[in-house]
Amino acid sequence: MDSEQLLRQHGLRVTRQRLAVLAVLDEGGHPTVDEIVRRARERVGSLSTQAVYNVLTALDDVGLARRVEPSGSHARFESRTGDNHHHVVCRDCGAVEDVDCAVGEVPCLEAAQHHGFVIDEAEVTYWGRCPRCQQNPLP
Amino acid sequence: MDSEQLLRQHGLRVTRQRLAVLAVLDEGGHPTVDEIVRRARERVGSLSTQAVYNVLTALDDVGLARRVEPSGSHARFESRTGDNHHHVVCRDCGAVEDVDCAVGEVPCLEAAQHHGFVIDEAEVTYWGRCPRCQQNPLP
DNA sequence: ACGTTTTCTGGAATGAGTCAAGAAAAGTGC
DNA sequence: GCACTTTTCTTGACTCATTCCAGAAAACGT
Image (cartoon, rainbow over all chains, first blue to last red; front, top):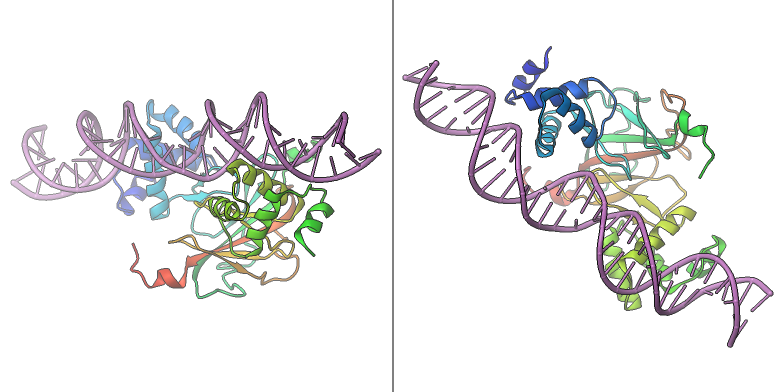
């Protein structure tokens, strides 16, 4: 399925800017907004920062992108959606990697107490040190 | 155990500012920095915002406070530490409540893949709508 | 108390993210 | 294709949580 069809399927107009951002996200990883701006700009020549925010918000709304924002980091985005996977984050450098859900399809939704909340998602963040940072002495 | 002893035990000097912030945190809840500044300032008369940031960082470093920062929210702090409990967050109003760990003492530390990371904490955030917001129509 | 070290104050600076209005482009029907 | 309507993009100003810095004040050990 190409990006153009995906956009139409979700009721979004097809624009150069959106295709560029989708292309960057399809390269994988967990780029920050800043990185997305830079890499998408390379693809289309010129592109405003605001447009990238608009696009990312739109993509997030329809489920074509997912916002990931670990404590203390800036917003990151990824294109892998719908499988409720989780993330490992490096305390030192902020690197993010995907982790499949260990529990199953719709996991940990069973909170011990829900305080009357209607819960629709359980987000797990694993904190640690990445291989690269393990080679450096602790601060 | 009073706050003064707690501070000394962790190698921190005892100051009016630190005692005020600890007192606010001891009242429970998950106040934002802004709220902490306001409420701590009521206790000591005058208090700089920067001092509150310093104190909170120091308390977090030694484990007397814990920083909670759900995606899209500003930093919040709580005094309940060391039991690896989790949080439910309201998507609409941002309200935060505690949730005991459903899995056990040292939970979900078994990530399906760790990518070479050395993991030391698993943080779970449940997303949903709080009782109050459930009474309002969806946006 | 004295001196040393840590902490607090006050003010300026940073920077991610948001807001708003007009210009440009996308989709629709003729 | 061409004109029309609606959405999206650009530009630039703006907000505000958080950080940085240097001097003043307070805490602790002797």
